[in-house]
Structure formats: structure tokens, C-alpha cells
Length: 426
Image 1 (cartoon, rainbow, N blue to C red):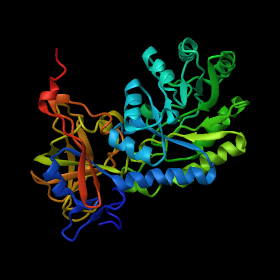
Image 2 (tube, rainbow, N blue to C red):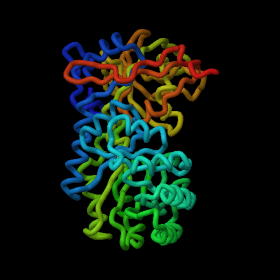
Image 3 (tube, rainbow, N blue to C red):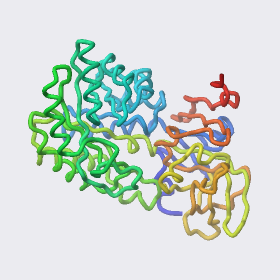
């Protein structure tokens, strides 16, 4: 086995004397027995430590920086409450995410509203709650928001999302900084929108925002993005640098992942070098805050050998859509029989789900120790976008979310019941 078989598992994970995976001090097999599978398991201390790492890093390089969680990555009340308790703000991209953030305890002045297609109702809610900023994505946002704020006799703080025409090395589906993007305003249009907003009495322009993309493992792209927007920042009080830091999904990625400290230092130094000391700094991490804190537990249902060895589990694309959307790679292990890649006796497997699609492949190149029906299988780094994108394809109820800490577990989102599949029928 490699030097660190748990390189991509939550902090504090371990293998006990019997080879069982421990998560937050809890035996993974016991978690599966108690809570059933599939189950999203979140190591609470890992979540808190990562939030603190972000706060410490940005405080070191930009005292007073505003760090917000991009809640789309894991819009679960318990997760939001932890991050609120750790002093972060919240980035929401819909009326539903706004309601979740408020319900979880975020003060309105710590919330930003994003979105490329904000409805009238969402903009009204933003103004009525007095959010810290509404991030203007297009000219229609400006028209509607100015009217709504004027009708209410208030002035709404706004940021402008700028598309910097800078592309990071990531999948097309999560790249957002290129010129031809559904998000934000191009540099020329942003300049015109700055002038337009400054002429409106019901809006107050405070910041410029950009987001190059997600799952970025190289940091130089952020300096290029800051350089692109720098000419627009005269009279701007704040620059929001979006998020984008990737996570290591597999052990071979772990060694080339920038640290949170490196990420913050590169971003802040780019602003200080290219814009100056006069602007406040904001950042909006998502995946890198929550990704590593979560794992998913499954039960192996069947094993068959049709050229490949197919290991089918009781979940799949309904609880983790990312491999099908982005070709995302994951690792998998039997929770009480970890085996090193390439080890003698390891079985090359395709870990697949139970859903009626040939694309329902969770891990195409897993190596497992003699998988058998009834084994508990674990995939790490599922804290981001698994729960958020969960669905009920084939009528499979959505899994629970279980927090683990100090050797104890607690359900924070219960498993969906079968009767809830038709509970909204009329």
C-alpha cells in the first residue's frame, strides 16, 4: 500500500487494527449498518478546519477580507450552519439557496446573490432582506433591480460580474472565464455598465467580481484575470475574486494540489501588484471548502465478469452525477480491505451504479480487494456537488447526510422515503 492510503480522505481518517476505515472516529462498516447505504458521510472537524484555513490565509494576506462559501457546492442546512459558525459569508445563486442560507443563520449582510437569470421575485427578496450585494450579471439585472430598489425607497449595493476572457485548465462544463460564457459581462460591456449604474440613484456600485472556473489546479490564471479587470477598477472599493481552487479526487492529484495559503497569497498579491492597496478583497470558495470532508458509502449488490469485472452498488448517478457530467475521476475502496493500486491480488474493476444508463459508471478504473456482494464500498471526496445534484432517477430515494465527529454520528438530513416520491402529486 502507498505511504498514505488516506491522502484524499477527510482529516483524521484512519485504518484501525482490523483494517476498517474510521471516519471522525466512527467505523465505516458500523455507519453503513446504522444508517444504511448509500449515505453521504461528512467529517465535521475537517469541514471546520478547512473553513479556518481559508479565514487564516486571507487574514494573513488581506486583513478584513470577506470569504464566502459558494453554497451551490453543498446546500445542506447543517453544512451551512457550520460555515456560518466559522465566520464565513454565503454566496447564493437562487431564491431557494437564499432561503436556505437565511434559515441556516447567515445574516443578510453576509450574503451575495449571484445568477445569470435572476427572477423578479429573487431580486425583490434580495432587496427586501438587504443583502450585502447583488452580483449584476447582465443589463436586465440592472433594469429590474434599479426599479425594485427605487419602488422600495432604498439603495441596493451591487457588484458587477466581469468575464475577463481568461480560461483556466478545467473541463468545459465548469469553465466560466472565457469571453463566450453564459455568465457575466465582457470587458467593454462591463465598462458601459459601470457608467450606467453610477447614474442610477437606487443602486450603489461597490465591487467587481470574476470567476474563472472550477477545479483549477494551477494558480497563474488568477493573475491574468486580475490583470484583465484592473483597468475597470477606478473608484471601485472591492474586488471579488470568485473561487476556483480544485481538490484532489485521486491520490495522484494530491501531490500537485496548491494549498489554501498558496491560493490566497497568489490571488491577493495579484490584486496588490496590479490594482493596489485601496480595494477590499472577497473570495468565494466552494468545492475546496467541502469536497474532502465528505465520503459516500455504498453496499456492493452484484459482481460479474463480462470481459471487465463489474461491481454494482446500491447508488450511482442519482447520488453522484459528476462522473457522467464531467468525466470526473474518483477512487474507491472496500471499507475494511484497503488495497494499494497495482498490488498483487488487487482486482481491476468498473464500479457502476444501479441506474438504467450505460454511462452510470462511478469509477472506471478501481482496484479492489476481492469485491463481494455485501461489502461496504467507499468513494472519497464527495462533499462537493454530490448532495447538491442528487436526484431520484429510477425512483431511488435520495441518501441521508450523516455528520461524524469524536466517534459519534448524527443524521442531519434523513433518507428520503419512498412515499415522498409522489408526495407532491395533485
